[in-house]
Length: 517
View: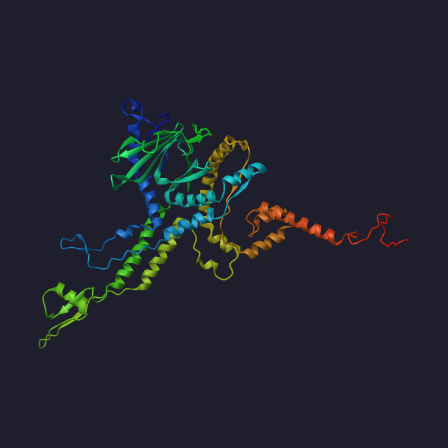
């Protein structure tokens, strides 16, 4: 393969996230084939901390948290921790992480974005490509980008010949970049799992696809380490696009760019879970421990026996759980009884810790608290903007990355439009405007719009109105409304509308004409 690069790492920089230019050491090709190189790169990446954290982000979003594997332990006879099976072991998941991911993704991508261009024909073509399905894909990409730090759009044609985009999560793609800024893609490897059958027994198959300028090359990762050509679903080497004409002839075409578009949550491609995992785990543990302590009642807590009528403590526990009664002896001055070593559970302590964890999690994830005290009563716009300051700053970073990615998206869209004869729009200027889903004081905003009509254009004022999603469409509605009102006025005040006119006399005045015999 041309341009295959090998990343070089330094042990002294393990704790840092650096972007380094990939390269192969001199003479490496004489010692290693391309396939061997790819196998080693897949193995290195497959179990890398970065990919594991990307997978963790997806799992935590789905509710699969580490607390679900937690076990209760105690100090054993040798002073080491031992697993205890006969104590309450609740595993509570309070998924604040998923809430924050949804909050951040919907804040920036929840509202349809606006495509602004001066070419009306181009605008109509873009509306067909950027349809509701694409809007949904874009919003889902926001969640995937926050979970993995990066996700990927794959432009392709459906079975019906419709141009569309598919979303790949970050943990499926191993990119090889041409530059240290991670902006120009050389080629990429996709690793994904499918369920197949070995006879009648289901098994998991690791499939590998390599995307480069020559097309898509398909392999199976046999034994988790060896690449074997995959011819189960057709040819091993496929073009990016295949076209079937009326006679049934199939022709293959390749894009002049690798058909994978990176969508980054931030420049460093850092998963959000990396910033807040310890806080999310702390919330889960605190709630689980609180429930454990509340369940440790007299039937399963520590008991102190006095003059117990029996020797087997296991039998005592079983009788207590079964009958709820304890049999003790009373020998003269020796009184029997049962006491408990009780540890008081202070619910306020748990509430305080949980509140600290939740606030810290919101701050570290750069989200906002919808129950903020600044929203009580009738908050003004300054209080609302202060509450949104953190998420707004973080959204600026994500929007910058997405704006850069849309240049690549538009390149593929323009190529599609040119290839299908819909027009050449390569040199057209397009602005992509993301409408952020921010809470505002509508009365204050509307009042400001009304006061600005004297100094700003109507188009500018309409674009800032809280009830308007598409300013251009609203201007067209206003124009139609004015035309209709003008027509109504002309009908109402036309002095000739109800007048009788004699064509033979040619009377154009306002008086009546007498009939002559």
